[in-house]
Image 1 (spheres, helix red, strand yellow):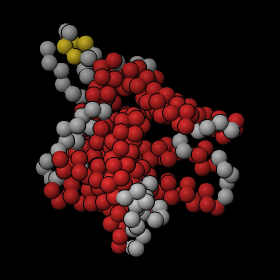
Image 2 (tube, helix red, strand yellow):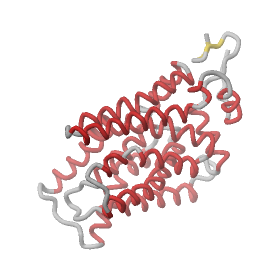
Image 3 (cartoon, rainbow, N blue to C red):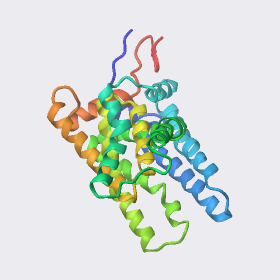
Image 4 (cartoon, rainbow, N blue to C red):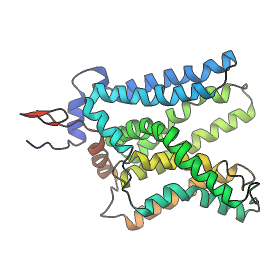
Length: 301
């Protein structure tokens, strides 16, 4: 027997029965992720320990572990397979690959060149390019950001998009995405610089999450696309050819505007545009499959 993918209303009815994780998956995830994440970032500050092992704990236990656990409780083992499958969904077109891999460094370098803050990299341009690709595709995406975005984008933002559409989902995801970093900003004491940096983070993150949300909608929910985009953002902020840090901030805003403009101009009829279309698209990635006669939660029996 075949199964069909439920829409947002079917998802709401499904969520009203069962365990707390099934009824309130977003709430349970946030309680686990923020609780464990804040502990992980606060402990090394209190005991003077290196931060790196605790960052790994936050990434793989507080975020990824919480997302997988809640997905299992809410959707069954098939939900985990579907979400992890999205982490390796790479077939989304050469143009999208160019955007997620090269958009941030190209715009960052262009801004630096236009404002006189571009310099020759200390190790040369070939080494700079090699370092960027390694930081983005290997260390950034595969080791860290792919799994971080499995939680933030693959779990949280996808579910919020299925309920609220892209703009609201980007804002609601951005708040905990920025908020989990609070202990890092408070570690060296509260002052005017820390307050400015924190305010900038909370202002910038919804813009970035909007960019991520557009990638999700245009790639059929690929977590790989947004993992590479996340890693590219981080690596572009550490380019040795750029003097200063403001260029990468402006670059992520410009990239978001350019992608949004391209979707409006060329995407009508081919991409999910508008709240209802966004909700339907996201529901296809997040909703548990219906059970029917001879059908298990994961598919035909």
